[in-house]
Image (tube, rainbow, N blue to C red; front, side, top):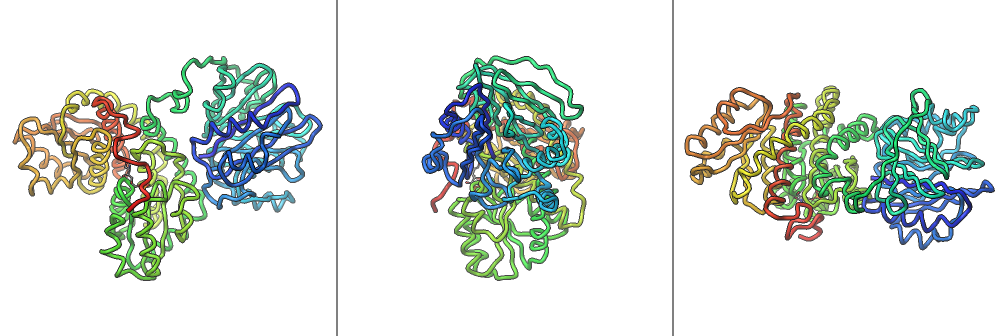
Length: 596
Ligand code: M6R
């Protein structure tokens, strides 16, 4: 996830140290390259940028020496296009009068770049941040002032992004927000804008929150907001922030896990926009469609997404795929695969050793290796034949949450495309995720005291919800340290039923189409004194048979598994806390497992 920061001051001064500090504070978001630009009162722009870590690039390019009246820094998290010096941000316009940087994704970037080149502009990179600058240049060249040019540019730039831009010969910077974060800080003799609060708080506690569709004009003495729709000024009170930096880094949440759970509506929306516009989806789907055998390969949570992906593929495209844990792929399938087979390797980190070993084993046999990967510049991203980014930004908490949702969503998107079906059914998902969080939070809170002292439980599902039961059980184990087993609900009677006695808790994750089979599972447990909890869309049959119900908003049955994941994540979080553990850093675990 990229980060941006801009500063406007009342006199020429050293800006490098301030920009460098801001860059360091943005680094927790994850990035692959970094850049700084300063604008001098005499009209010169000093631009320095490259691939690498903040301290390393800053030392190499001497950021500390940079001076000016205005400046900006950007940390880039590549989605498409390899991290490179030219793709690093900020970017200049054709004749070097404008400089700008963005955060987020401009999804019609490829199309815009062609237009800009055809209009005679100098396009230097493939990065979408440069498109933000040219989109403004296009209208400045037609004689519009900066405010009007940004209003026009907004109509051309599709996607979720925010950007900061400055023009030679002026005294202000401009910032614009649509879908990605942007906050403004009002200091003494200086005004700041940033993609996130932690980079501003050490400089000022006076904050102006920018909303989508708003342009900010930053001057040394303050900031003015304008509506992109009608260009009219917007009045907003400045807030004074009293909380700690730690609170700000966690976005106001007590833990990264909770923050990342709540980011799911936003990251799902961003992924959908990205996939809808991406020229990389069609070749990906064609390779999947042409495969003799298709394998979905991952570990832990990523494997559960593979498992759900295989059910999606069967239901939405009528094709089968084999979901397999990466280490088991090596003895069970690698000896039999060849150039006609395709594997989709799924990983948040892109560095999991088990996944990379399976990748190399597959590549030795000539198999095509596709990837769904979150961390930009990771080994999996670099070594696979083609990849799609998961667009989740940095996931800090060890328990994977938002990356699971986007992995599963990417599979569903690919399955619909492969089945020749419209992906429009996915459009309501971000809103449904939002509604689900609001709806299930009190229900989960009410359940917590009933489960907190249990050290042993089951989580069962069927069909589309079987992988969710596996994922829910993994999350519960990981965060609460209790034993929780995920299982196909119909398998329970083949053995585990013997463990059930008075009050033994069993969670059921229910898809709308599988209520009858789940109800019989519920009854097998209820009549032996077990405690049954159903998670699903409101249904009289579940109400009558289960002791507790956590209800989800009604949705397309293909979306229900994604919604059902949220109460299990929240339940894990709450139970872990109630049992006295740190949900972000469970004992014995590591975010990225680079060992066998
Ligand atoms: O980075 P990866 O997706 O390859 O990681 C795979 C597993 O280690 C990971 O999903 C692990 O199971 C999570 N901590 C679960 O929350």
